[in-house]
Length: 94
Image 1 (cartoon, rainbow, N blue to C red):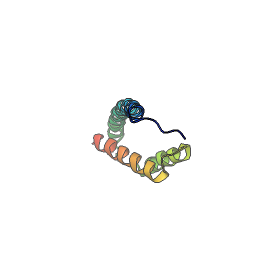
Image 2: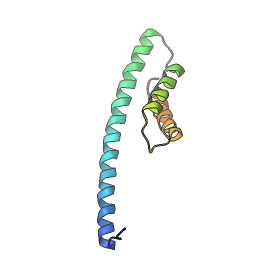
Image 3: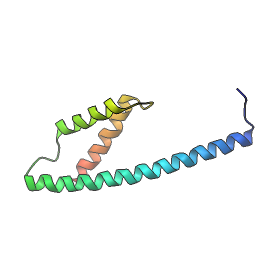
Image 4: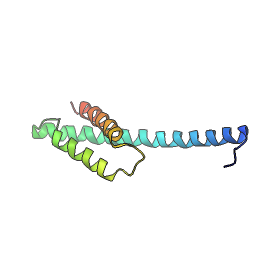
């Protein structure tokens, strides 16, 4: 495998960081979109006099995500990320 020059490597690094920045922006947009929907769900639950926390639904979401995960994200890391996302969304419903 041929090694690149320092300048080539710096350019590659810069390009990959830009790719990460774009993905982060998309993730932020999607997370905010998810949160807005969760808030609307919270209003519906209040009208129905239902509890905000639905452990069965959260387990279902996690199992579906794990089943569809193609990696390289590890299952336990995926679960940590989405458990945190759901906790934040749940707090927004109060």
